[in-house]
Image (cartoon, rainbow, N blue to C red; front, side):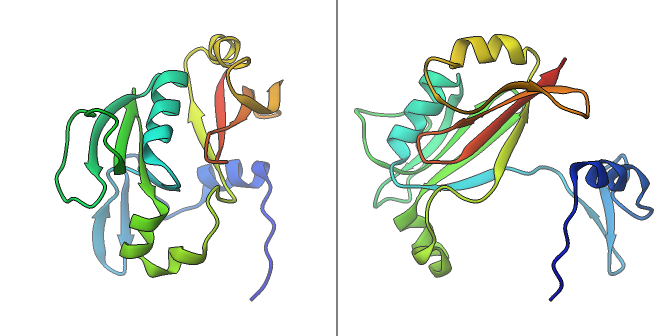
Length: 173
C-alpha cells in the first residue's frame, strides 16, 4: 500500500476539477447504479452519552432530538430524570450529531471494543458568526487552536469536546 499525502490546496482543487465526481444534485454513479447521497451524520463513540448531551446542549447550543435509554430499545423524545442514555441525537441548524456509548457501539460493531474514544479526525462546522461564537466559547471550552485566518479565506478556531474530539468552527473573514 502506498502512502499518499494530500494538502488542503490539493483537496480544494480536486473538489472542483475531478470529472465524474458527485454533481450538484449529489448524485454518483457507482458500478452502474444511480446513487443519491442524502446526508452525512456523525455517530461518535463516547463514554457517557448524558454528559455529552449536556456539553453539546449547554455549551454549544444543540437541541436534544431523541435518545435511547441504556438497556432498552425504546426511543425517547425528551430526557427524563437524568436517565442514562446509550444513544442520542443532537441538532443545531443543519448540523446533526449522534452519540453512542462505547459499550453499545462495541455490541453492534465488535471491532470498536478495542478502539480509543476521541478519534483522529476533526469535525468541520461552518457557522454564520464565527467571531461571535469564539467570544461565547473561549472561556467555556478547551481551545486547541486559536482564531486564525486561513489561506483559503476562512476564519477558524478548534476546540476539544468533552470526549476528546476536535471540532473546527469556520466562517467568513
